[in-house]
Image (tube, rainbow, N blue to C red; front, side, top):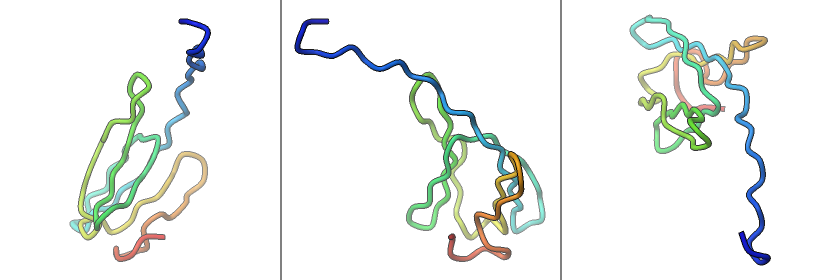
Length: 86
């Protein structure tokens, strides 16, 4: 690198969280992700892969009954029965 271009900062991947999904069908599953994003009625679960965020799962919000962050303590991210997210 030259004097005008700084060295990139060291990158350390954040610790992922574990989310419990309950689908409208009643099926329960868990997914590991670094971030959850809500956009245009969709829920995106993102995970870090070699310093880049990648989509782990993308689904319609209406297809999910609940989303809970169960990494440490239970945290409700999508109200029971679906609907608008918090």
